[in-house]
Structures are given as structure tokens and as C-alpha cells.
Amino acid sequence: MRLIKIMFCATVLTLALNACNKDSKNNAKSTLNVRMTDAPAAYNAVNIDLQAVEVTGSGGASTMLNVNPGIYNLLDFSNGLDTLIAMGTLEGGTTVSQIRLILGPNNTIVVDGTTHDLSTPSAEQSGLKLQVNKTLEPGVAYSILLDFDANQSIVETGNGTYKLKPVIRTIEAAISGSISGSIAPIGIIAAVTATSSNGVSYSSAVSATGGFLIAGLPSGTYSVTITPLLPLLPVTINNVSVTTGAVVQVGVVTL
Image (cartoon, rainbow, N blue to C red; front, side, top):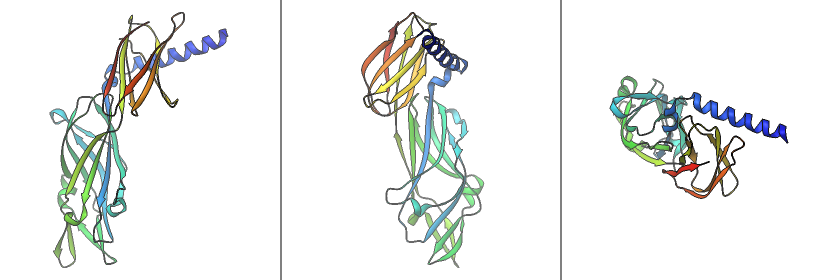
């Protein structure tokens, strides 16, 4: 029994130290996924050479997202299908004002079985710029869907040449929520676990300032347990309701 207690304490201590070693701002991060879809079009294929995705936020600061580069046939992602093209982490409270898709030179269109170059001069130089106005709440994961309209985006310029003048609609949605709170007194090492009604658990640790945040939670009802080192006993808060796009505050938990 003593060995089990020692192992538990070591585990909690490791979690807490890892949390404390991170910048305190990490508790205020938001995650952003960028996905792509398309409306059906009267072509065999519309291939874009995606190289990078950049997000411009508050104050003009730009962040390069982790991108899945490569050739994408837009027509593979129509009729409700989509694909993840980039993801990243931004400071909570950031207002995303623009998404920029940077394309390479290998863009093509297939018409009646024949492949033609697809000219994208602006995309290769400055990127496809999409205006967005979305404020990211701390601890919440978001998804922005880029909805291409291939029929309106392709311009035939004559002599079998085609140009991409993209018509893209952006659809923003929050895809998860989070639970936030703090403990008293400050300075106690403790682990925090949120357990859903179907038994799935998500864990974090209390920071050096007594705060905690468990992010990326699907909507549902959770029990939240704060487990400090012995001789202090765990405290559980039941029936914490998490909704998509919201940070649920459980207040100060006294140990």
C-alpha cells in the first residue's frame, strides 16, 4: 500500500512540475484547425499545389500553421466531404483577421480528360487571402472550413488556358469546450481530472499560481476531481456541463 501511495505522489508531482515549467500563458492557448471542402464542378479535376497556410491575428501578428503540403484535387472534397490542411496553436483572445493560402507552381485543371496549367499568379506571390473575423476564446478548439466554389473560381482565358480566381466562403465553428478553475490555498501540488458520463477522462495539473484548465473537451457532463498529495484528500465536483465553444468556470475549490 505504501508503494502505491509513493507511486501516486510521484505521478502527481511529475504532472505538476511539467505544468509549472511551462509558460503560464499556455493555459490561455486556443487551437485552430483549417479544413477544405468544395462544391461539385463540371471538370474532371481541379488540382492546387498547397505549400503553406498563414494566419494573421490581433495587431497584425502572423503565425505559420503546421500544414499538410501537397497537391489537392478540390473535387475529391465535395458533397459534404472535407480534409484537414493545417492546424496550430494561438494565444487565447486572438482575433483571426486573415488566412493566407500559399500555393506552389504545380496547379492544374483536367477538362475532358486533358490536363491544363492553372494560372495562379497572385497566389504564388502573395497567397490567396481570405478575410476572417473570429475571436478565439482561451482553451477552446476551433475549426475554419474553407468552402471553394470551383465553378466560379475557374476562368477560361482562351486558347485552352485557365486561371484561378478563387471564390471561397469561410465557415467558422468551435469544436470543443473547456473547464477552468483554481484551488485554495495556493501552492499545493495537485492533479485535476475531468471524467465524462461515458467514462472518458482528461487530465491536467494545477499551476504554481493555483489555476487549472482542461481544454479540448467534447460537450457533455463531467465530474471534476482535484487530487492533492497526501494527507490532503481529493475533492470532486459533479455535474459540470460543458458546451462547445465555452469555458466553464468551476470557481475556487478549497482543499
